[in-house]
Each structure stands twice: as C-alpha cells, then as structure tokens.
Length: 296
Image (cartoon, rainbow, N blue to C red; front, top):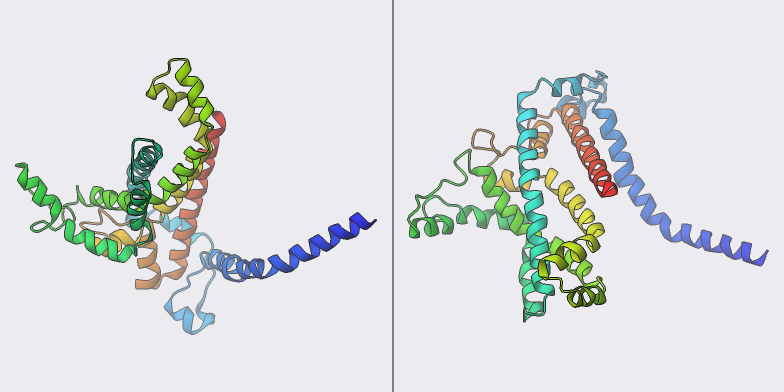
C-alpha cells in the first residue's frame, strides 16, 4: 500500500513538472496545427483577417488545386532534387569527417571539431550572403579557381542548370558539422575489442568499416538520415536569400512557394494546404526509411 502511494506521488510530481512544457506544446504547437488544418479547407485570405465572416468552407478544393498548379509541381520537383542530391552527400561527408576525427592519426581534434561545427551555429542569412559573394560570376572564389585551372567561369546563381547544385554545396557545408558530431558520438560508442578481434583475424581497414563500423552505426545513420531529410525538405532561407527562387523558378522550393502564397499573395488557405501536402510527403519518407532499416 505504501509503494502504491509512492507511485502516486511520483506520478503527481511528474505531472507538475511536465505540465508547463506540455501546456506550452499544446498552446503553441497543437492548437496552431489544428487551426492550420482547418484553414486549409477554407478560402482564408487577407479579407478574412479583417472579418472572419468572409471565410468560406470550400472543402478539398485547395488540395485539388495542387494537382493543377504548375508552380507547385515545379517547387516539389526542385525540393526533391535538392533532398536526393544534398541528403546523401551531407550524410556521407559527415560520416567521413567523423571517421577522420575519430582516428588516431589526426591531431588537434578539438580545433577541427570547432572549425567544422562553426558553420552550424552561424546565422544562415549571414552564411547565404557570404556564399553569394563566393559564387559571384566575376569576383567569386570558385570562378577564380576555375579560371586559374583553365576552365571558363560559371554563372553559379544565374544559370538554371547550376543554381540548385550551388545551393546544394552551400547547404552541405553549412549542415554537415551537426551530423558529424552525432556520428562521432556513435563511433566512440563502438567497442574497441571488435576492431582488435578483426585485426587479429587479418581484416583490413575497408573490411573493418564494412563489417563493424557501418552495422554498429546503423541506428545513428537512421537518425541522421531522418533529421537531414526533414530539414532539407524545409529548404527555404538559402534560395530565398541567394536566388529568390530563380532563375526561371529553378530553385523555388515548396516551402518558399508556400511562403509566397501565404504572405505575398495572402492565399493563406491554399498555403496551409501546401504545408500539409509537405507534411504528408515527409511522413511517407519517414515511414519508408524506417521500413528500409527494418528490412536490413
């Protein structure tokens, strides 16, 4: 009976301590999400802000409009292109950097960790502005190197064929440090005796990486892949600052298109439907990654 009372006290204490956080989540997350979902079935616009009587329920018309919206499909294609190209590249670069920093050959590891992580904590707007200068067609560092080796300069942000790859390079550089720290923690949790046993069996470095490192990092890799995919699907600041979605909508992301519809043209109901379409896509992508991990 005393143990039961103690459990009740623990539950009461847990509720007291958790209630402020849960209340904040309910007010600032759950309620806005539900409200946005309801708005996605209306024609909510700038006139509705002044008078709620102007709101009309239009059912799934906003969602059916998505299938006929050329800009929506363009932005969706650009976003998928970015995620498919930048996602695996970011994970691979992060893993490679983590393995290097975890090896015994590298000195001044603290300095390298700090250097690689600085871009993560640097303001994205400032980073994007700096990279605009790096990509400058005449005075940029990239084109200076290309000209130095005898290659014609590239209009990185003005050419539809190069604008998105340019943003991919910048995004990978900006974000790989965060994933590197996670991979580094995963590498340091792998028991050293596994590598010692592999060395005694005559396994080379590649065999150790394939048979020990990758399998032991599988949960970490899944987590890194998920957060990278979710973050990259929300691509916004980079194209908004560097290209404004151009040239010729080649870097228009789905979040940027949602922003334009909602806060430039005030089609808030339609913008909300785009947001939930993106949520559905991310949800499906997450399920697929969990399914692939489960089948391994």
